[in-house]
View 1 (cartoon, rainbow, N blue to C red):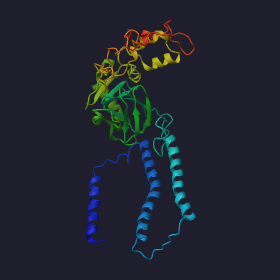
View 2: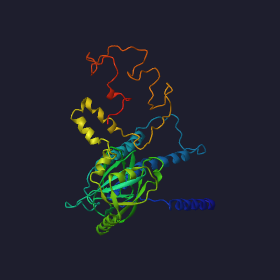
View 3: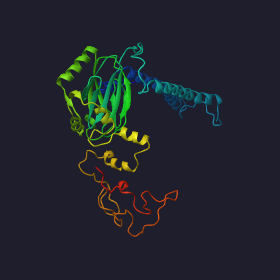
View 4: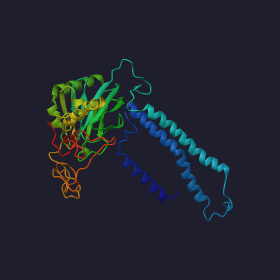
Length: 393
């Protein structure tokens, strides 16, 4: 190698080191057992794939050099077309890699299932039988994180803590749009969805302050939707709980509805006490007064529905645009010229019957040959099913 090439190589290596000096390699050097197992899975998968990639790259360069046009000593056989030995080598190696990756994926998918309770604290220690896990209920708001500690009756915004070597049972939901809860040092990311609850089981093994974030784009304040996760010993955790209770305020339903409104760069907040059942109302999308909880609606559906009288529940089940003060404009207008979501009827449609004015009512039968409910053959749908009908109080 010429001196110029040596200098260029050294400069390139120096630039690479300088560039990597600002990188946070927490994903590959985490402090929680679940995240560590996931990092090991990345390493194993990468090594298995490099078993194929490295020889292929080397052989590609070797063949290009070996059989270059100026090398007249290289064997030349224009009639060659097949080699069983080469075919076995070429196909056996990738097949073995695929089988190995499949086995690793199958085992890890079940072993690292986020819904599966922890069986160990780390590679050397199992979870003691008498250990009580810490339950944390997580709500992704716009654009901040709300944490409930039901065992202690407190809540926090954009800060959470957990004792070292104690299993954590996360119950995760969202208030409006889909989001993703992620503490790289603790465990992999998991979605937070409105009206649904996802679970995550994890443990932190080293004390420290770690960063948590939203890893799923959710609007204007997404980039600032971050929080601090403190891994502390049991004494430090007890002190943190005492500090929250001493400095916190009350989190009532009214206070939650104010907190739920979109905001960015929200500071850390403490709540010394929480209204009973608040997390349940958030999960079931009924924190707003007058809304029917989703579990209540599912119970009605499970028992066969509420019948025609259930039309009174329509307004209580309207959850979309619940933060908007007015109807959001649509991207386009219908061909009738009336704005979308307008109270005005479409052109050529009778407001009372909901049918085209040019068509006279005709007999309207269902699939069994019976008239529609209410003895209204050929007429409009009952008022409670008509979107233009006002909701009952």
